[in-house]
Amino acid sequence: MSVQHPIIAVTGSSGAGTTTTSQALRHIFRSLDVEAACVEGDSFHRYSRPEMELAIRKAQEQGRHISYFGPEANDFTRLEALFREYGATGNGQIRRYLHNFDDAVPYNQVPGTFTPWEPLTAGTDLLFYEGLHGGVSGDGYNVAQHVDLLIGMVPIVNLEWIQKLLRDTSERGHSREAVTQSIVRSMEDYIHHIVPQFSRTHINFQRVPTVDTSNPFSAKDIPSLDESFVVIRFRGMKNVDFPYYLRMIDGSFMSRMNTLVVPGGKMVFAMELILAPLIEEILDKQHKGA
Image 1 (cartoon, rainbow, N blue to C red):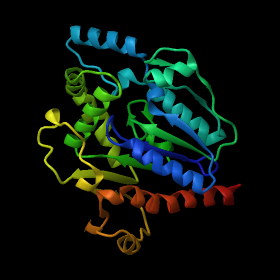
Image 2 (image 1 turned 60 degrees about the vertical axis):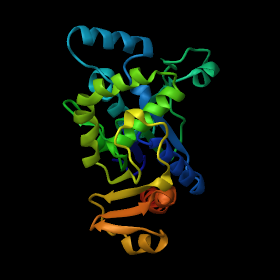
Image 3 (image 1 turned 30 degrees about the vertical axis):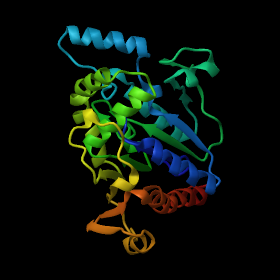
């Protein structure tokens, strides 16, 4: 962690809704006139898309599984090195993973490849990470220890699978069968490298549908925010003003001493209400330490 060069990370598995959280945070950054160095977790994959397909086939031939959730397909030590360097100096190297043609055309590259590594923009106020592994920790790496505010996006798993299935088939051109196989192949890494992160977060936002998601593999649409509640769990945080949140968010209630539940339609408002003061506190410490 760093007072002068703080790091905020949103972590959640593919299809968890980290993009919604990121949009809320970017709105907060704009309102606070914060310049953030933005880092995409996918840029720390080890393999391009063709290389990953080859690695998957080789692993299957050996009776193993490989997925984007685990250390074999990601460079966790390099991600930790970026966080460590940014915390110490405000600098570091980043690149982009180009998911589709819209991403790739400006770089004159093909989808599923990486842009070259390049320095972060100098003079940023904080580093903002969005991806799978903002709170990952394991043998030889501990990314979580460098994060000043770690936010988990954790829909219940059936909803997560629905979001992934519909996103990857409609936006990334994958077949439903291929996405389903990807979910099955990823399960061991999901259990060992994704789930434990949510015990290291400062705040988790877990979306729970109020409609039937019993068979996510046959779903035709994603339950809307209004068809869900959001469970917000605070971990290791002092002076959380729950009475204020209850007054401000219509329909909210406490389910446990550290857990606030809000209507799904209020999720973005709740995020901004809760996260903006925390970010202001981080920036106040930064200015006082300057």
